[in-house]
Amino acid sequence: MTEQGVAATESSGPDNFGAGNSAASRDKAYFLHPYTNLHAHETQGPLIIERGEGVRVFDDSGKEYIEGLASLWCVSLGWGEERLVEAATRQMRKLPTYHVFGHKSHEPGIDLAERLIKLAPVPMSKVFFANSGSEANDTAVKLVWYYNNALGRPEKKKILSRVKAYHGVTVATASLTGLVNNHRDFDLPIARIQHTDCPHHYRFAEPGESEEDFATRLAESLEALILAEGPDTIAAMFAEPVMGAGGVIVPPATYFAKIQPILKKYDILLVADEVICGFGRTGNFWGSQTMGMQPDILTCAKQLSSGYLPISAVMVSDAVYRACVEESKKIGTFGHGYTYSAHPVAAAVAIETLKIYEERDLVGHVRAVAPLFQRRLKALADHPLVGEARGVGLIGALELVADKETKTPFDPVGRAGAVVNGLSQENGLIIRAMGDSVAVCPPLVIGEEDINLMFDRLTTALDAAIPVLRG
Image (cartoon, one colour):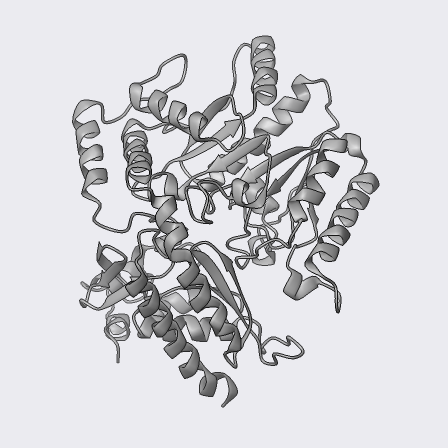
């Protein structure tokens, strides 16, 4: 029996699932986990990560893992970056916390806003800070509505997203998210959210349809949806440059070049969700640059602080900002904000993170090692369990199928992903299963030796999964 299994037999009361002295048993007794099968967790318990070093983490038994998902797509600089620790320590001693409501401010927040505006992929005017990608996207929803009210367009409020998109888990952003389990039994999506087609060529292209023709069809479908709903009712479209938690879906060639003119035609704002793609992940500083996006609003988080502290940002164009100014003048305040917006310690760590990116040319490093990453990833398309290997830069996914010719998934859907995920973990590699796709997204500082080792471990897990899934 595993340590977690032993812990599960300990008991100190009827309602705590066997609380004992071990960390695992106390976790099961007191901790409600996100994105977890809560019923299974009562028996299975947690993998407890105790420390990290470089691109590796270590559990409480001392076992080593390559962290192939950079925690949750975010630890770009790996674990143990002392400059970030020192930046946090300095700021904690100087001004450990303060707010930015009611004309108050502080230098870390000002400095970070200035840096982001200068780094923006298109001209932007101002930065609003939040604490997570979900909060950043939720803020963007509110700004879109506020903007249209300021322009005297109270009916122009519907927001478009895409099937398999991921934009967060607040009430509004979970509604934007195009994944069924984020809606089921949460009474979502809310009104005024519409989902258009998923841009996944492998799954949704017609037989023989090229990427360009598929993109044309999606653009035509988008315009048909806009016309059916009424252009005067649609305010914005949210889009990730590469769809992350929906399966690392890279858009087909010409996709954004074809949908953006349609958005412009009907005066629909484009919100680029750079929560995963921003800060070098795709081989450019922004995923918008990689995919040719020209957003009116841009949201970012995760790699903004290398995940060391919670912080996110929303950048807005001057047109959006000026409308907000006029509306706040009419009302007497801009009635939105968070206690921890631009928290000085988080902002200081984000500033240091951005300095490191520039000083070490991290984007240049990504471009140097990405060809090996993509070569090893794409080679797994030949594996008996893999239907598609897809990715860009240092992010990728494998879609697991029971039949490569027909693209038929395993039954039940999700089992194959869970099996490969579990075997990878046993083999010292942490990845993430999203249905029957498994994602790989290592820290940006990863070198070629660890890229090879990571894919060696993933290949071993795939091989071990064959008899489990087909036995």
